Image 1 (tube, rainbow, N blue to C red):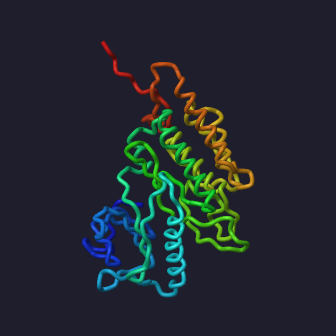
Image 2 (cartoon, rainbow, N blue to C red; image 1 turned 60 degrees about the vertical axis):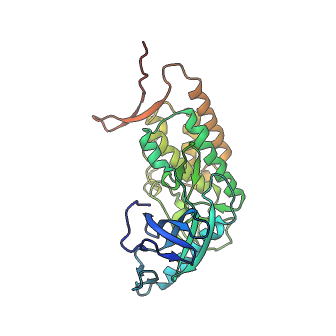
Length: 329
């Protein structure tokens, strides 16, 4: 989500559902506006997500209500609203320390709202940028492995996230992850002939997310997770799957970063297979390869405490360099 104010956002101090007070805009996307708010009953700070598809919606004259302003698109508006409300239903069934906590969801002002815990961390995108895509064992054990376990948990609950990417993961102060934004999530296994609303993120969505009736499953989230690991190790997401349909020549992450263990590199490449039936279908492989990578970096020789991605200003190609250690007298 973008961190810019939306001109159509609710005004400060507006009360929603007689309970939640809007304080400020946190972010906006094509489908929703997220606010920092307060629960008037408890005084607790909360995050409030309002359904507001920018291309279809307008604010009523009272500056609260929402309506579909595009003729002939009311059906699409209602379809998207139903998907938004499903996010609340799905979140309400989940209870995991690394998933944003559900508090409430309801319809009001002719739109939908989802109330969640307010997280104080930073997105994984921001974290990796701040740490120059640090390649260290602690990041694997504190952030990535818990993220894998979180995806395993939601899959066992019969849910696909369908939008795993760095901007949808918050890194808390203790380094642990918090999985956000279940707006694209759905239940699985899907019923025969069941249609899904298409939500995609360039570089992170597998081919099956571009179809309403495609077969989807845990391997679909694994593709997105592999793309996230590609971004972490290479400093950029993989080439979008639509560009790989006729000539799939995705290079190994080791061509960008030789310090990635061959096993992890192979699992990432396997997870990014265009055809779902040829893709890595178990998070156990991802978990094991990350553990091996963490072990390798823990036992590397002294003097290379941490590795980070830096950009070569002459060639514009990412390469890996050891961080310099402070000299001691």
